[in-house]
Amino acid sequence: MSATWRKSSYSGVQSECVEVKLDQAVGIRDTKARAQGRLTVSRTAWAAAVTALRG
Image (tube, rainbow, N blue to C red; front, side, top):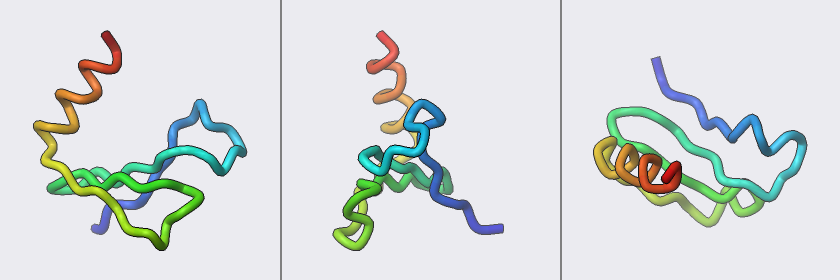
């Protein structure tokens, strides 16, 4: 099964947000510029970023 792109539930109907795709690695892209590519990071790096952002 392939992972799907998801955006935060806090974004509502806004199109100016970040989407993530959780798979073996984590893909991150800008919703308003999907064709511009994505950043891919390890699951460990993603978990560390989320932890740091939560404070």
